[in-house]
Length: 128
Image (cartoon, rainbow, N blue to C red):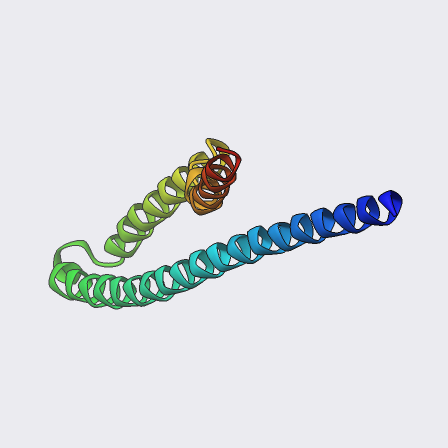
């Protein structure tokens, strides 16, 4: 009789632990889903901003070429090519430095850490 009660108790404890694990897993998945939604919104806003900036740069370039063609001729095309190439290379190196310094890691890990800290606080309050 004692063995059956012990077995039932252990089964209930393992069932509660498994339910707690599933609850934590669901919270982490929910946090990652929220993060994914935020990143997708940010991605689309950035795409629209890049597209708008591209049109502004294109029309500005056409205006500069039109206004300076008589004084510089074809040399203005070389000058603008050098300016845009330098700008593109500087942006590329800046993006590489962000990846190299892993500045994106805190953004990705913040929500997961909040969920883990919340779970640990709840488990500590249950123990008391």
